[in-house]
Amino acid sequence: MPTMRDVATLAGVSTATVSHFINNSRRLTPETHARVERAVAQIGFVPNPAGRLLAQQKSRGRVASLSTVKPDEMPSENTAPRHEQNHQQISPRPLVVAKPILPFAHHDVAASTAAVSGASSGTTRHLLRIVRAAQPISRADLARRLNVNRSTVTDIVRPLLDAGVLREGAPEQAGAGRSGRPPIGLSLLAKRTTFIGVNIGVRRSQVGAALADGSTVVEETFDTPPDADAALAQVRATIEMILADTPADQQVFIGVSVPSPTDGDGTRILYAPHLGWRDVRVSEALRGVKSGARTGPHSHLTIMVENDAMAAATYETRRRLRDSSPDGGWDDFILVRAGTGIGVGLVRGGEVYRGTGGGGLAGEFGHMTIVAGGKECACGNRGCWERYASATAAAALYGGDRAPVMNGTGPRFMDVVARAEGGERRAQSTLARVGEYLGIGIGNVISGLGVPRVVVSGRIVYGWKYLEEPLREMVARTMAGRLSNWSIVPGEPTGSGLGGALEVAIEQYLTMSNNSVREVA
Ligand SMILES: [Zn+2]
Image 1 (cartoon, protein in one colour):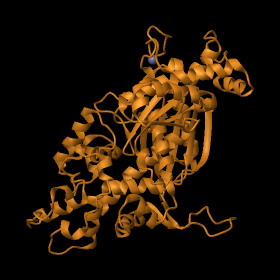
Image 2 (cartoon, helix red, strand yellow; image 1 turned 45 degrees about the vertical axis):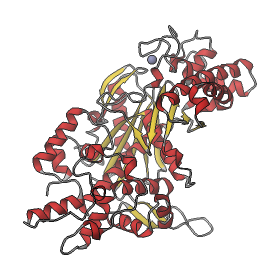
Image 3 (cartoon, helix red, strand yellow; image 1 turned 180 degrees about the vertical axis):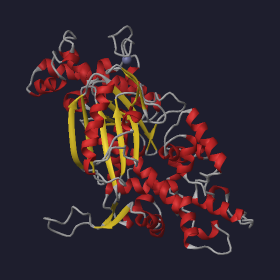
Image 4 (tube, protein in one colour; image 1 turned 135 degrees about the vertical axis):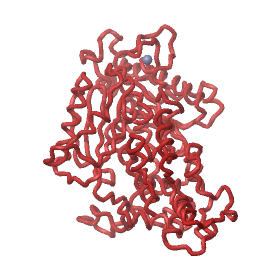
């Protein structure tokens, strides 16, 4: 039977792209979508194990009657993956068990596993994310958080343990040098897998590697070279240094966070106004990284390029998944990342929303105009929100907008925060003013998107003490502020930079693990 790899080869795309097509987990450009669709049709690829089984039965000349199966119990990815909403798949609807869905003469183990995992791909995905966020976690806790029974968790977990995606027991690091019993539960094993995060910032960039539990094992920081080719060469050299001891059969997942919208396939920077980079093919530049002493490029490589606000949204989603409180409202929230610029990410049903169509412009609120004829922006417009409410804008405002902040001659945002902390009135009122602008924009975003929960992340959070009250006042004045039960909380002040990039890499791994387990089941 054709595999995902066959489809990828035929369509001339990566298996990750095929996987995104199947799961509808990432928007693809119309061309790529059509190409994958053609390849799927051409070789008769059936992405769903239950569907594969059905196809096998048919090819053996047996007519399988599925008349006993209700339409909403049918695994649907094999027919119309694009219409599936992921947050619908994770609904607490009871899972379909093997017997009613497979009215075949005899069911073997594979058939049972296929039926269960096929009917619950969204649940498997959600389970993997919860394990990732809350590891180690017991089966009982997982069942409670997924609102399914324990036997369902057992059915989902078994192939993941067999495939080396998960492990069960005490975590490797725990126990040593600690008193008390280490917690027992499921955690990510990610056998023969390396995660690399690349955070390309406007001023500074980081490249790091992490373990499956998310702990960073190595981190390199450097000033971002102004030239895109030079920057990517430095990123590549740093990755090769990290991979120097990596065996050839190791799976390497690279997540790249960039201050720019990206193309639908997650391969390119479209336009990074603060860097002046246009159409930079990041994946292509990193595709050839070498590992160990070999001369050729590392072959098991998956690369995903992601907008920094989206990466931060992925990171904050994971942080909130760790919390097991029954407050499920954090499945939907707006992430406002304010540093050099402002980026906005939207999370719906636990998934980062990337817009529709091929533009990759979802969440570009930083460049919405809030002051008519206002300050010039790097994007070419005037009066953009980020010119008034970003950390850079705060530093510029403090300096009377005279000193060009970007070349380092003016006070930096952290200096302004330090002066405010030291009791300086001017620094405090500057931050309060920026808080107002931040609140005006957040009020607009809440009103426009209809999502009342907001996480603010990025450098701006360092000044939260002085920003918060004026920010809340401005939001409270808006219509959304008066009509909705809104909440705004500070997130990761580093804007989750490298952490967000690593999260993008791990998210790729979870998606591919989910698919591969379903393929072999
Ligand atoms: Zn702008």
